[in-house]
Length: 74
Image (tube, rainbow, N blue to C red; front, side, top):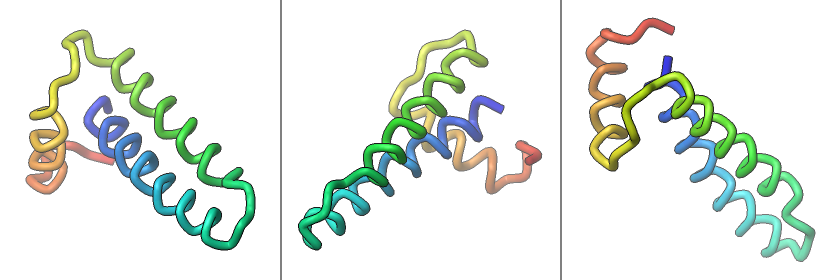
């Protein structure tokens, strides 16, 4: 479960950057980007809560490999 939360949190935070750029290009306040960023942080914190070991940069790649390899069930 923590792998899914790591991947979802990272994806949401990356999406928030794209949403912020799009909102600022339209000269609108980036409310959707801020909400998406907060949801991404919440997912990462949820992943940290469920996994007792601290996160490392390599965990993102390993989580992706486990998801693609079928070791993680949704």
